[in-house]
Amino acid sequence: MIIFRKFIETVLSIFHNFLKFRRDNKTKPIRAQIFSLFNATPHSHSLNKYIDYVVIFAVLVSVICIVLETVQDIESVWSKEFHTLDLITVVIFSLEYVLRVYSCCESKQYEHPFKGRIKYIFSASALVDLIAICPFYLDIFLAKSIDLRFLRIFRLTRLLKLTRYTGTLNTLMKAVQREKYVLLAAAFMMFLMIILTASLGFMFEHDAQPDKFESIPTSMYWAVVTLASVGYGDITPITPLGRLMTVVVSFVGIGIFAIPAGLMASSFTDQLRLDRNTFEDEVRKRITSNNFSEEDKADLALEAERLHLSQAVFEEIIQRVDLERKLNPEASPVLGKVSTELTLEDYRQQISTLRSLALSEHANALSDLINNESKTTQLEREIWKSLSA
Image: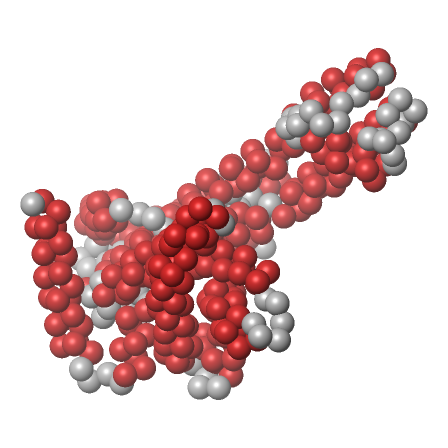
């Protein structure tokens, strides 16, 4: 009964949002309406979320079918049903792909009718959408002349479609970009350790086990397994020196292989904090501009959703920034009745203090801290740069 009531409430909510969507978008062209259905805009009225849920459900159903097809007993009984479900999901994915390509020109990034669409087609998300449906159509048109059964495994790329519905991947890519030099250094150390371990393993074990430690390249498999502390046990040293060396490199490998994981975890957390600080700065900027509208709030709500901020946290930020503005009106661009002379003098004092820090003997150490992207925001770094200059 509860499930049925929830279902009815969901259907009514979709119908209500659809009516609001039609009312607010009736003067807009079809392309703009389609864009609002597939992308979060102030005029989407949550319909894009319901479409996203349909696509996500289709992806999950499709992947489950692909996995179960590999079980011979299940596939022999449900092969027709699997084929039907695959056909339905491909139709959904194809329709989504065509409509996204058609409506992408509504975005400023792809606004040119021809070049914009070409640019979108070669974007990462569009290529994932295309690869997700290609095996199905290639199998239809070329199956008689070429054996394309191996392409079926590429249907699992449909899982990558889910990355569109979360901003976590973008945050992770930013974190990797920030720490790319440190990650490259860690990867270089790991490569050296693998070569060194494989060479020692070959030197100590080749005479005793020529079939397993045939050469240094074949010993690299054992080196990776040992350094990563996996230990499959299919290749093991039997000489005293080989076993002693294995103990040593295992302890070293724990530290070397743990560096990238710890670094990425820390960088990912810092990037989330920076994104949220930047978001709070944007909220503060819009609220203190004296023309904060409901449309501005809707735009900020979309950004908050991308950063995985709950509605309660978003409202808390809005209230906190609004309270700061009321308690400290001189911080607002609109000074009102506050003495502008007093505010200007206070501003000069703050600038003078910061300049003193920039000229102090600790300026270099402070500059290193401020220029660390994991500790400060872009605005704070630009202010310090201008003062130092």
